[in-house]
Image 1 (cartoon, helix red, strand yellow):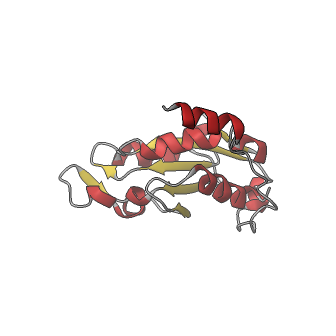
Image 2 (cartoon, rainbow, N blue to C red; image 1 turned 90 degrees about the horizontal axis):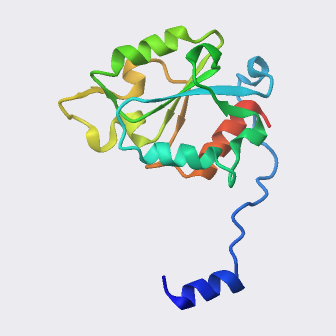
Length: 161
């Protein structure tokens, strides 16, 4: 880092937190979720780029929890399954079992281009397919990796907050 960069950062700090405005139009699941969404995250074989952005979306800067969205440790406590990466052959069955362990109503959210169409992993020998090839997907969040603002906006659309 140069002295000039540090000086400019101190003199002209960037405003990272911004007003996100009104909530996006609620999806059909808002009534069933009552403004709250508990998410179980599963990495089905990604490069961990999407995981970093999910972590950023739930970190203090973007704070997705202020809109009623939380990450949970057990699929039995979850309303939605957030899947990142292409589904590898070793993760296809655990992904199905995780979805079966979730109570109804439940959602499946595919996050990132690899989860949608396998991205750069398309045709690899260890890849079963995209998330929609293994389980039914309700919502897709595009990007490689999607920015935290996009993730938070999509989750706000699900909670209606």
